[in-house]
Image (cartoon, rainbow, N blue to C red; front, side, top):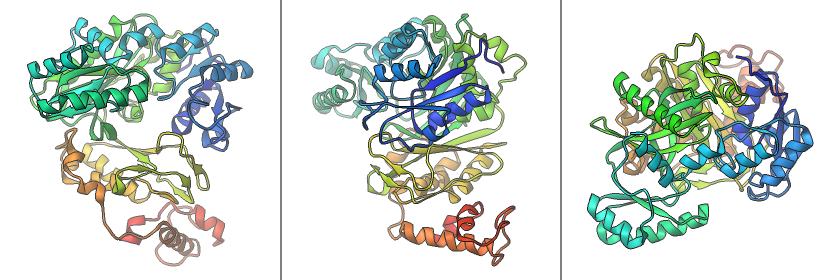
Length: 513
């Protein structure tokens, strides 16, 4: 699919794995990439991979990736014609989208007006109501503490109190008892003010038990929009997604079409013109309720790419350049094919309350093979800084059916290692191998009800022991001893450098369990 008119150079206003993923899409289309980076990220993988790189200075996000003037200056300095924001940072900032346009550049995302109409929970809920999209009973605006408490009592407990601005679970609390409402609202306001600079709150009935199902859609600048079907994101911890899959095991054609039509109707109502995601809660009776719209590319977009055969970054660039969806999707059958699951690999310790980690990655080994994709932003010897989100990579698999995809993901996690700092790899495999996940008997409270999945075994070897075991296996393969070597392993001799490279067949859990 060609982008017309063709961008010559695009700045990627992000870091890590999503910056690398966007740069890959640019390279496939013959477009040069510009990386921006903080001082802490000077040796980050996205900087090394880019055609051009500009230092923004500082270490924190506020000093670098969130500084609009610095990002625009980098675009001007390098002659970039467009800016892709990735996700997070400035990706859903309508002021940034406007500033990009005012600078004579193209923002690879929706127009600022559409972002404003969908950016806050209050505004998005009002638009959903107007578009005929089912919403959860509650309020669209902050009525003050007493007013919110009155609404909560009227719609019935339990309820969710939520920050009107922002997302990611910040400022959100489930409240079971009326006597806890005042404190929950006050605590939500404090967290929302700190996270978003906006302490407005809303209240909604708690849909429970529920599954988190979202619709990926994309629209062009000519009034056309299409649904690329659903993803299920019900496996969450503290309202943060852990595993995502497409399609959902419980969404049939009728429900898929209804949800897709609702997302497209909302997109058209606000004049949306790029990739977006409409998020819903679905109860066990098959009723769906609008949550919010993420006006950007999602972390979990690869599972949609696997099952539909489309490249979402290519599509984003196509419509940002003024292209029509009918041109890009001509002849494509978008019916979901097979099943895909994504696991978010994070520098954190689930066994110790999901505490984020930083430090040097002494060894990185990421799996490969049929139906396996790794979107990664790290490498052996790189120091993970403490200033940003803890996600290191995304391990994504595809199989002809859900059972095959589950097994493939479990096997891929066995062959995954990020040694030197704590990660959630073992935790992810425990979840994937759990019977509830394997049978798709999942709801948004799965992990809250199963704390033992986070706790894990008490006695595990440290990273130095694991690294030594892996090296021994690699040395054995490269020298021809033990079990037969995988294809290509050890082909250039038994030297220690080659041994560290020949890790494609090691099975970490066979070594340690």
